[in-house]
Length: 193
Image (cartoon, rainbow, N blue to C red; front, side, top):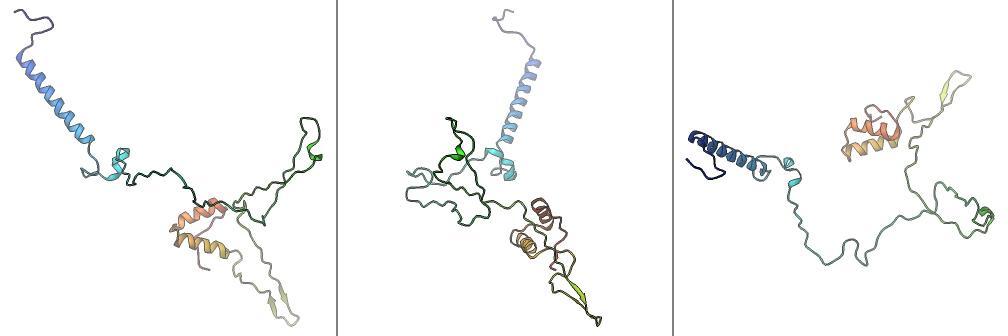
């Protein structure tokens, strides 16, 4: 039997087996494509499994205005205080290109820059020294103080912890981490004393 060039002769059972194999592969590809196309809207999968393929829904209407603040908008900026807690003076030093000392030249003006920040040491420890005296009659007297315990938390620490716990909903163990990390204080469970 003469076959055209490029054709080969195979047995019928091999041909049927190859056709079944091709159909199985097509079915498997179809199943995998369906699985890939599943998301939270067309299956039982949670929305968190959608990943980054979520379609972005932009409900804003197009506008002819430019991005950013519009003309006439009153911006806000930080305002300098007239009573800074600390002033650091930065004098001009060195020499001019001509060789003269800059510190001996005339002063044109002094420019001010202010930095608003949290102080480095946020915790202060106040020691109350309470006098104890004894009268000649034997009666003992001590100075007036509101502090009953030898060491206790101050009113501001207590107020901050209550605020963060009740208003900020920060649990006690995270409050302990906060005070340790931010203030260097190892606090136990807060008490109302």
